[in-house]
Amino acid sequence: MAEIEVVLGDITKQKVDAVVNAANTGMLGGGGVDGAIHRAAGKLLLEECLKVPDGPKGRCPTGEARITGAGALPCKYVIHTAGPVYHGGKSGEKELLSSCYRNCLLLAQEHGVTSIAFPNISTGVYGYPKESAAETAVATVIETLKKAPAVRKVIFTCFDSENYALYEKAVR
Ligand code: AR6
Image (cartoon, rainbow, N blue to C red; front, top):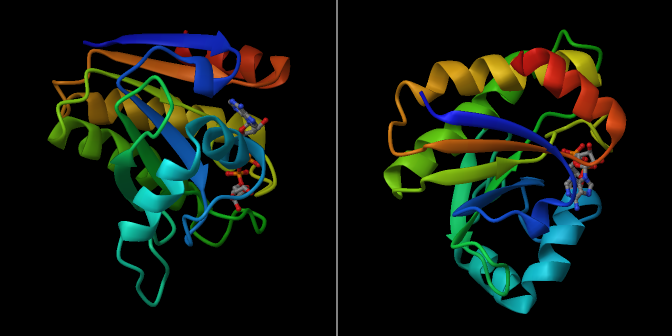
């Protein structure tokens, strides 16, 4: 089984093969962690994102994942995923959030990624309750790692102490 770590910090500073971006379906940047990743990666990342084909539901439909190079970031790849906007929990949000984590790990496996850092997808402006998001994230990652043997290390990168405590609890 891969190693699972919980850290409090900035995802752009993690020493991993791939960082996951909590993006939106358009994949052209935004605020929060998306803004931080694009700022740290520079315009090369935006150029890479523009190469991803755009469809009727955007470049990355909600719950799916897309991989690009990482521009000036110290990692090899950015894996972009669009988390669900939370509308009370009865609109398939849990399944969509779970799909984000699963699809990111499966894409990591396809590309031989051995270490990956996840942010707390959807728990910022998308309003997903932090505790249930943490439980879904950890359960999905543990389950999917069985199908992603290339991935040896997963870092849940929390930006606030509340999420850090919730992830520590969920991982334990
Ligand atoms: N490193 C790690 N985590 C961070 C960082 C960072 N540098 N900065 C913020 N976070 P959010 P969402 C945390 O809002 O809810 C964007 O505009 C933050 O504290 O970034 O999925 C996109 O373009 C929170 O816990 O993402 C989309 O439009 C977590 O990252 C939309 O926001 C996620 O918060 C996506 O919303």
